[in-house]
Structure formats: structure tokens, C-alpha cells
Image (tube, rainbow, N blue to C red; front, side, top):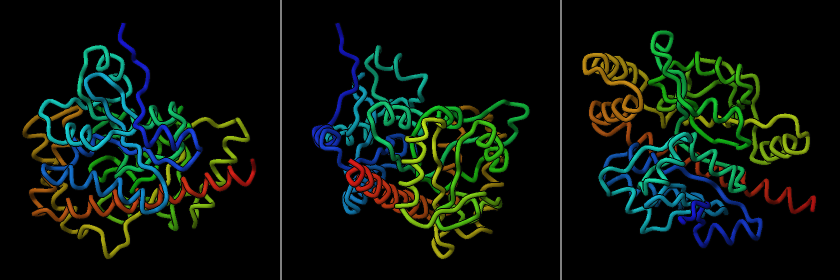
Length: 310
């Protein structure tokens, strides 16, 4: 009989036993979000950013049917370089495991696995959300409903600007997912600093976020996620005019080529990379490295808080 339990990397297993700070990282950005060979180099940089801020990185993915919390470098390399790596949301995990698949976990899947493993903080680039034309297509990322029932803090640069940002925020409110801006009252737009919408809450330190996580746990009332929206500084964003022009071109090509479903996001991100001559890739990398750093500092603050109350 095959053992389908979560498999932990050695470093992550030890850190969890010792209640040291751990940060979950997704593998979809490695397999589907960044072009080769940049993807593997950046994946290693993301893990190093977490280490540099005092936490242990736990990149989550599936290798030959094993759902791994804390991929080692050989496993990370496999998911970054192999063809046919499947993009896995929460619904796909069991079937993929049963069929022995190699798979990269999305935000939804990574959040769910991290929470099941006892990891409370997750760093990513941008969330999925409500797609444009969703009123006709009903196309909405599983990230949203998963975060409604998963007690994890997700540090991100808002939702990807290729989505309907306003509708996504409305859905998050309906689903009861808390959203706070990190040192901002404006919701970021991934490649751009300001996504065009106000936020009700803002926090100014990792310790404040750790306090919010402690309050959620001790109340025992709200069991959903906390989105920490961490915008790029305005001097590091993609030029807004270039962004808007590239997005309009990408949406037109999307319709022309009849791309839909899971293929939409990688298609548009690839278009951004090509049309901006790599500028969007550089911005994407800055986003995830900044978010990894902040997530690690939140995890450290949360661990210190737990130690002080023990």
C-alpha cells in the first residue's frame, strides 16, 4: 500500500519540531511562472531571502506522487527543469498523488498544505482572483475560496493586474478573507504599486501582523486567511503606461487565441515578459524577494511571540 502522508524535508521537519519560524513557498512560480533557466535561479534566491531574514523556507510541491513540504535542491531542480510538470490546485492533489505525478502547487494548494503542516505564513508574488469577463465565464481562482477556510497569512503584492482587481476584492470581502496593507492604505496591483482601490486596514510592522495572527488563533472565531498586501515602492514598479499598453495587447491576444482556464495566467505573464523585453520579469523577481523577506520577518515575530507566552 502506498503511503500518501505529507513528506517533510529534513530541515523543515526539524524546524517544525523545534517550533522555529518557517515560511511556505509555492512551486508553481518555479514550474509555470518564470521562464527557464531563470526559474531555478530565482527559486534558490527566494529560499535564500527567507533564510537571510531568519526563517526556514519550505517550498511545497509534488515529486512522483509524494506531496513534499520542503523540497530539497534536487527536487526543486526536477520541478524547474522537467517537462510535463502539472499545475496543482487543492482539488488535484489526491488524484495527482494516486497517479504518481510531478506537480507544482498553486497559491490555493500551497496554502492548504502549509496550514495542514502547521506553517502559518506563506510568501507568493500575486494572488489569483476573479478574471475579467467572469460574469460570462464564471472564471475565478480557487485561491479565493481556499483562503476563506484556511488559517494562513499570505504575503503578496495584491492580485495579478491581469485580473479584475475590484471584483476580486469584493469576493474576498464576501468570503470573509481579511486584507491588510503593509504600510499602505491602497491595494497593490502586482506589477504596479497602486491597483486603484482603498483598503480598510493597514499595519506597519511584522509584529503587528503577528499580533493579528495570535488574536485570530486565540479568538477561535475566524478561521480564514489573512492577506498581507505588500506593494512595490513606486520607483521599483513596472512603468504604468507600459503596463497598461502591454495588458491591453495581451487581453486582445488572449481572445484571439481563445485561451481560457488555467492557461490564462501563464499566457499573459509570458506576453508581459516578451512585450516588456524582460522588464516585467525583473519586477516579478523583486516582488517575490520582497515578499519572502517580509513573510520571514512575520514568521520570526510570530515565533518570538509564541515563545514569550509559553
